[in-house]
Length: 57
Image 1: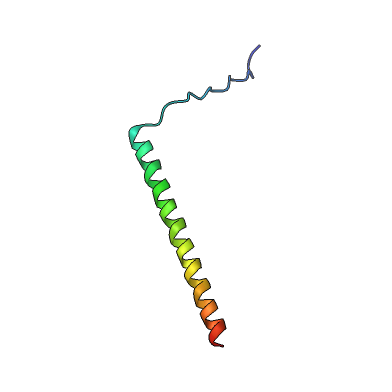
Image 2 (image 1 turned 90 degrees about the horizontal axis):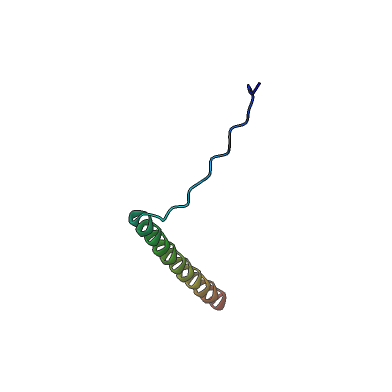
């Protein structure tokens, strides 16, 4: 009868990202790299401060 036939799954088409999407991804990657560098500097400074406090105690 065909009342409850399954529909075929939709096939996703793989497309090239637009220029806007590529630029956004690049900006995101650069921001994440700057954040990692900043966090690294923070940890280095915190280590120095802890070492200074340990020496002065």
